[in-house]
Length: 88
Image (cartoon, rainbow, N blue to C red; front, top):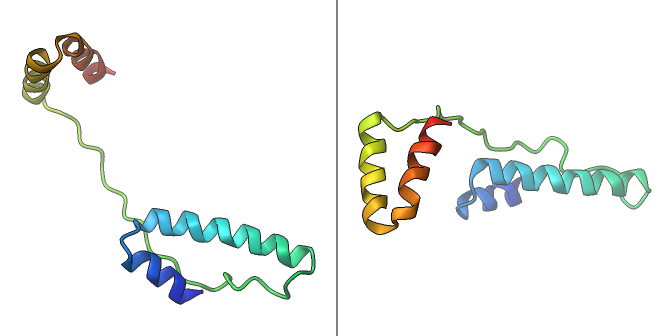
């Protein structure tokens, strides 16, 4: 089971994806234990990759203006939405 987690991680899956996948499998295996299909949950004790949280980054007023200008050129109907979304 630990090798499976390592394979997911080295295969390019993000740590949060690996954790969610392993947790889902653990629930399925836990149900199998409860119903007597297997003796124990092989997912127990398997170390999962740590998820590093990054702080949210917000656009500066200049970046908002640049984005709105670019949108005005490419898709004018989106330009007002840029300002609305930047303020929410």
